[in-house]
Length: 314
Image 1 (cartoon, rainbow, N blue to C red):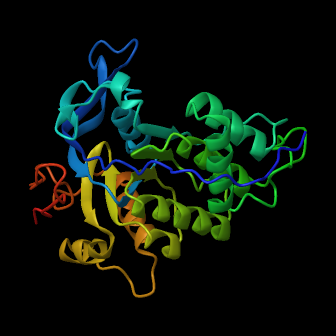
Image 2: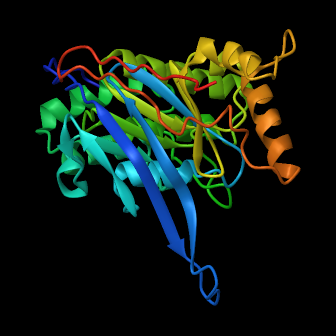
Image 3: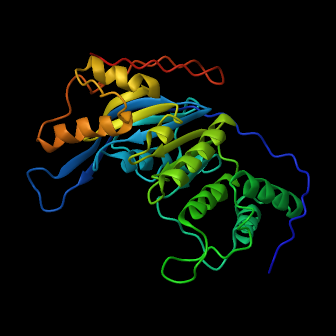
């Protein structure tokens, strides 16, 4: 059944700015049958902070702790030690649900629904909007995410009903989470499975969400140079440790000062991963001049502008 597209004016609430700070966060997991080493450390004293109007990439080789870091920040995993604060208050999964949203790597969309129907359901049951406001918010998000042309097409499933493309499904997954107007948006590898054009389009949308006042944090795998430079800052992990936390344009100078100059015209994201992967595959630990064992931070009191000063500890 097609839903009317009549537009209704409504005041959409603005995004409330949020500052997320994590200090020496560690996560250990139990290893069954190993009495000598009963636990394994997945995250090892990771410190840093994310502020409003930022699009942050979390990168690292396979097994570096990217998803675990995301799980810790969303409350899916409980840190063994360390603290996570939101606007100066200790993080609580129960209360954070009011202003956070998580887009998992795999979509959980109903294949028989259309984007319009899925969005209206989210507006009604997730955001608790009255019918007029729900329709207006749905129309706004369908337009923002380029889904108007496929609004009445069944979402579909790769093994059954044909429907939306991979890029359209990913954009719809993000739009559904934005129905609640979150201040903190987490995404687990949102560009995986997308071609370079679709991935760049999605990253541009995430950038616009961040510019509206939200804090957007995404684990990312092999981004193109064009997509990579849309991010504001990068948290680079290896073997559960923070190797770099800083502005994207400072990544290449950072590696150069550490003795690893990036070749001209080389994608900095690929280069950083190649250096770390080579070191780890050779059986070496993360180079000492990469690991920020202590990240000096100067954070002004919220809601003043957030200042994050991260030293390279060379």
